[in-house]
Length: 404
Length: 115
Image 1: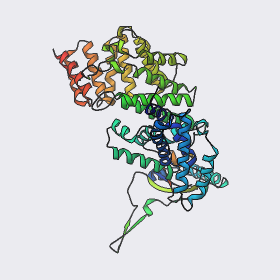
Image 2: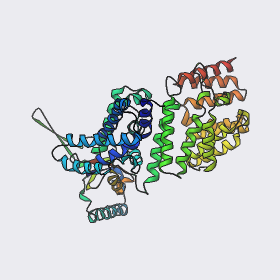
Image 3: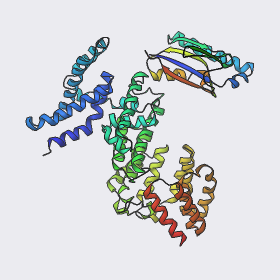
Image 4: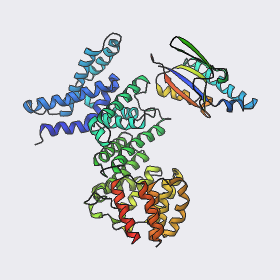
């Protein structure tokens, strides 16, 4: 038997996005929608222990949130606002007790929160707050910013949505590919923020899990989008390795040295099934296919590096970037030897000289090629640029090893 | 909602245009303006004379300060505007993307405070 707290928590996690999205569509008011839903959940926590959990907790919460929204519209809308509020109240009342069954409004919410006219950090914060239902405090902690700063960011974003007239709707067909890309970028950034924290603790799992939830939602709401599916697969296949990515001391463990029995094979199976069912030709699909090559290999030496190199080749064609070129060079080195990799790597110094991964990769290839002193110099350069403590300790160990 | 579309472009690039290029650009502007007014979306739209004709005025402590030139020296200068009335920001952005100067310059989309 689940406790009242567990039932409400579960409903809060699963239903916040839908409830808030529908209330915003009708009232055009983010704060009112969020607060009405919040209060409904609080009321459930207060009254259910005595009265018992309703047969359909979600329906109860939606109805309660709807009633609270109606109350607030009646109380708070004054003067000229009354006419619009009357229409909104009528629309909410017409939903009766079936608000939980009306079509999903989360897509509109997602597109509005990820609108390109909002600053990127505002898009991320707003998506986590309204779509994923994280608290301001949780988001502030995850992004290492003070809670008031994060609160202001959210307030400013909501004000801009209202004052600049950012529409609350799914973009028309011709704008959809671009805007979908924007939504996926936000989801991917949330994941990366969790996966590779720039300082302090290496992995902040919560953000990764939230990103996977959002990717799943997107794939569910607009099905058969190869890139959305690719994004979901990519996140699953990367997140599957989380337990093996750091050792007991919190230090980074490279893919090569990871204990593969600690990988999450349930996530891997799900990710591989997605990759195999719809191999994508876009950037996320290709990155998922690369992650799949790693996750498929029982031992590092079983990795199909030639396949990875060719996937990076393709990725460089669809989304050229120096970082992709760097990864391609590493894959070529693994397939054809360090010298082949170094030949591709050296010209990238122009663009990547300030990027510690470039110098770390170069150091590693020099080490493999038996050029110890040059490797040591490259490790020094990487160490001068690295920001993450776990990565710093890893590079220091490598540096010591080649110096001996 | 009403939006002001502020057209920023490099005046020197404009000055360097051949007559044909200039003619082509104005034709494109006229076509856009005709389309917007047919659809009832446009309230106003004008081209400004170059910033070399600009005067900046301030009153400080009751004293009038008049200086020559634009308010701020920038790489791209305000060269014209459209005032439009459309449903939402996305519609305003769509029109901004059709302004001929968008290819070399930038369009700032600003909602009016009293929409």
